[in-house]
Image (tube, rainbow, N blue to C red; front, top):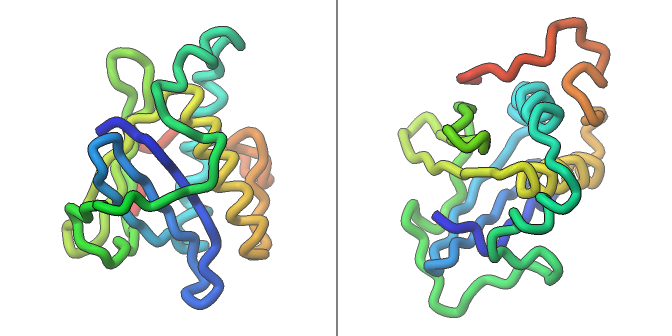
Length: 163
């Protein structure tokens, strides 16, 4: 799935972050991220981010056609392959593909799931949006630049599955 638009925004009523992802084929995927989930997934994301920082010229060429300079706009004829109700994400699976991109699968307990392929540039954008969403939520989480920014002493090794 080619990511066309991506947004992470705080939903105060649900006290969750709402991840909205629109593909180049007009499909929209929605997922709610809880405070607990974000705190558990962040060390793996930060470690992946630290391990995949591209050279500045590579970053420009990896944008991949997505438009990240405009506000998120839901297409008029959008389809919701997993339904219009956001997934309540309970698990994440992170793996590297053969090209060094992060494969991030988000899954709920009822077995609905979707995967994102994040090249280094898109991973930076995703992490920046996650930090901004957590800041707006005022959850008291500190999402630093690296996996150990919150005071943890474990090595920066991304877990393969989080529950």
